[in-house]
Image (cartoon, rainbow, N blue to C red; front, side, top):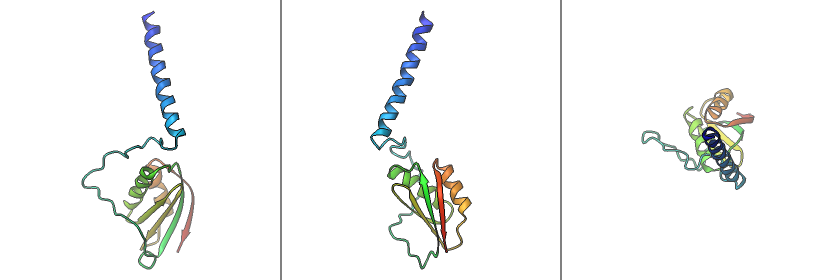
Length: 126
């Protein structure tokens, strides 16, 4: 009897957590990354407002699946900027990557996947 109560309580807790997560996603703000996690003091972000095409002549446009909010966009930008490129994410799914050198599509896709997102399509500009 006690075993059934424990199993029932565990099942009820699991259902509660799943329903709560589904409700967050349904409201549009629940991609699971609220707050984006703590960032190390050593890890500094480059703020990108405008990317000068003359200074960064090589460009790659990524269509990313799963980028729902600003925290997602920041996470993807940070992952790409670790490759020594400039990245600017625009919701809901576009990321522009610019570089002074030819951009490696595979390395960018791998960095985005490592951050927890999926690249749907890439388009290279030179």
